[in-house]
Amino acid sequence: MANDCIFCRIIAGEIPSAGVWEDDCCYAFRDIAPQAKTHVVLVPRQHVRDIAEAGEALDDRLLAHMIRTAGKIARQEKLDGGFRVITNCGPDACQSVPHWHIHILGGEKLSEKMA
Ligand code: DGP
Image (cartoon, rainbow, N blue to C red):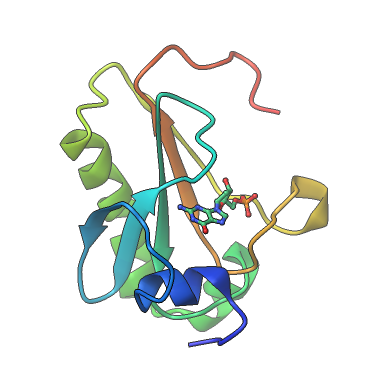
């Protein structure tokens, strides 16, 4: 755990969050500033800065587990019309929390533009 990391503190329960999924490897919660009707943030419990570091540092099984879990959360949230997953990496992508996370957005028709 990184003590100065908001998402590590959310995972530890030090900062309250509306959880939607939890298992041994990851945790998912509702975004505090939702950008779609449904907006969930999925994070690995292990602190890695971004997807680039995740690709270097995380076990292949955990990387695959994150993708599978994103799909499971979409089903659980009944995003039957489709959904979008986004992971911002670094300043050009406006990543604001340096703990890798996958946004899961849906529940309504999303913008045709991705950026
Ligand atoms: P990004 O900009 O891709 O790094 O996304 C970070 C997201 O995290 C952003 O959409 C807002 C969300 N967020 C930041 N702080 C908190 C918090 O304390 N609680 C919750 N639920 N979400 C947060």
